[in-house]
Image (cartoon, rainbow, N blue to C red; front, top):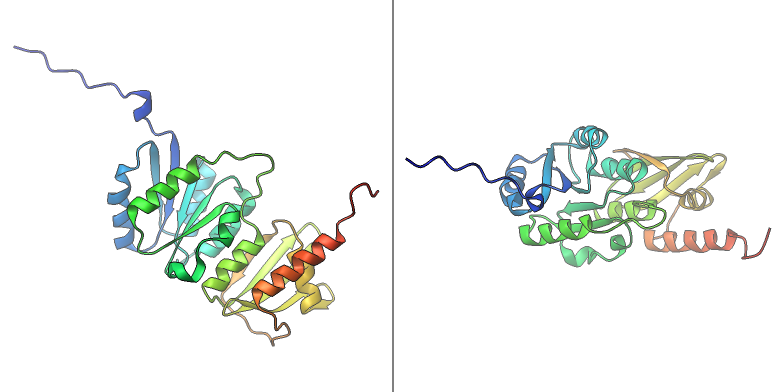
Length: 243
């Protein structure tokens, strides 16, 4: 009588070395992720149904890659991305969007810690993106996702909302209608002067409200607004060697 074979011990390479957090409120899509991502070797996979649940998981253990939907209850993907950028800037984010690839081409957001993929996802492409994100080693100061990238994402999604932004210098408001900034307020300034002040802030804390109830005072396309803000910010920087 042969003795029962002992279970094969897990090799070091079999153990999960990275943690992936997937945030999705749609049950059928979540089931697709559960089944399709089983082939993602070397990853422990966590699932959350909204941004609030995802933030709780981020507080409990290190996460190496975040995959999130945008439109969710409790806390949507925009709020989640803003909070991750603020509190966990080392975590790369992959955003699932209903936009056609021809509408975004994935170029502007590739400059930061964010990548966008079209829904429904091609699982092989998603897994390749997850592996690539997990192997990016942070170098120097980890900045996470900047305000410009979040505004670009809101623009692609044609989002109407009010952004409350807080930084070391104070609090400001940006109002967006169908993805375009139509008004801004900071201290005594309104309109373009306020917008340029706010856009110069480095990684402000951002809160979203799903309303935009102001008169339009800014009539620039977002791309032009961001370009002007960058030029103004660069002009304000002291020249090398100045005191």
